[in-house]
Image (cartoon, rainbow, N blue to C red):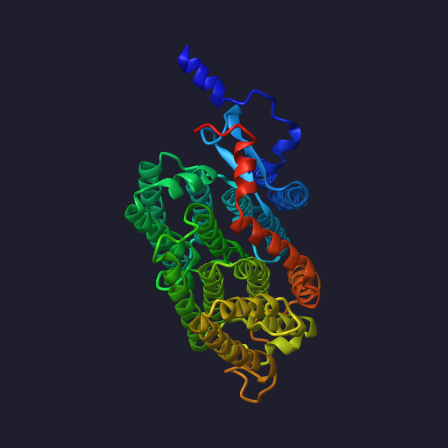
Amino acid sequence: MADQNLISEAMRTTPTLLAEWKILTPMLAPLVLAAVSLMLRQKDRWQFHIAVTAALIAMIGSGFLLFDIIIDGPQSLVMSGWLAPFGIAFTADSLSAIFAFVASLVTLLIILYSPADVDKAATKSGYYTLIMMLLVGVNGSFMTGDIFNLYVWFEVMLISSFGLLILGGKKIQLDGAVKYAFLNLLGTTFFLIATGLLYGVTGTLNFADLFAKVAASEATGTLATLSILFLFAFGIKAAAFPMYFWLPAAYHTPRVAVSAIFAGLLTKVGVYALIRIFTIVFPDGNGAAFELFGVIGGLTIIIGGLGVIAQTELRRMLAYLLMSGVGIMMIGISIHTQLSLMATVQYTVHSMLMMTGLYLLSGVIGRMAGSFEIAKIGGIVMQNHFVAIAYFGLALAAMGLPPFSGLWPKYMMLMAAFEQGYYWLIAAILTGSLLTIIGVGRASIQMIWRGGGVNTPDGQYEARGKRLEGKQLRIMMLPISIIFVLTLWLGISPNTLIRQSDLAAYDLLNVEQYIEATFGKGEHIE
């Protein structure tokens, strides 16, 4: 009888409203349609349309969810009628919804690009199915309300990424996949170990429940160690120094559309996990964690900037550019004020769009030049004025220069560091930014203004690759143009993103609404 009473107290007594299920839309739509895609994998003409539908529904669902969160606060759903922390919880706040919306948008744009980059063999081998499953894992990571299910969604994401990385089976892909798999599986192992130990200390893995349990725990030494383990595990996922080697070794090996979705989404999930863990589970950093964030972030920016200068291959250069941006995000977590977290959210959105656009554009440039070697791309960009304008704009965005979206979050990050007296972080950001400007500027001069390549001694353009004309060029340039317009709009009129990022930062530092959404009013079972 006592057991029945306990179960009844842990179960929900009211029916789940249909509107509450909307939190699952960003995962459920691509999951269901991925299954449909797999069953119809031999119908290659259908695959594209199924994938577009999945990403579009996920994006619209995330948009409606964000609107509801702005009006009513964080939303939550606990599966199977259980109350938190017993059931599997999905809890979405402003941060979750913003990231899920942008991730779904980025995926949609990459799918629109894919017909020009993916052949029938790859389509029938499950390319679009894997893209949809990757989106399932990414959005699931953003929406989950407990650490163990974050691990599960990471696995969904990683398995899908492994499949995309080796799709085609070229030697260089397999070499990159081995490095990618080894270090990411190492990070996953540390993640699982830390999760198990955290459960042993607190008896729970629900984010909202952990907030109180960790604060009340007397095992401060163990928790400090666990915070460092989580930092290491998610640092690998985010490609932060010194755990970044897998990124430049792997991201240039698959087809361009795959590189673009990796650059736009995968490292951002690692950054999201760091933000979530160190604002609700370890909000005080447990000692050395926040100091380590600053050191790692500063070194990541500088090493990334040096890599941008040193690289002679376009996609490898972009990998180091991506890494440098991760350093800025980690510095924002380290400073840990509302302004710095607002800048982190805004910069993450900027990076998701900008890096996706640059990788997609590298595919156009590489196809035109017949090579991704910067020395062999000389003058090729000027063959098409639309390509030249897109590259020039996205390069300015990457360097954090006006009038594009990279300017404002970097400026706010500098202000946040100045307010807290972190002058060495200001020096790191400025040094990394200068290195990035030098590296991207050098490559831009090579690709835009220098005439001819290594096989054209007269300095005149000579078609070394495949000319892109008509329908194929339009397919490739459509998503790039959309990203160009978005980054320009977010630079000229940043207020909308600033407001949403500020709301997300406020929610991260004031978790009462998140906890109330998870447990409900008066339904928290100790």
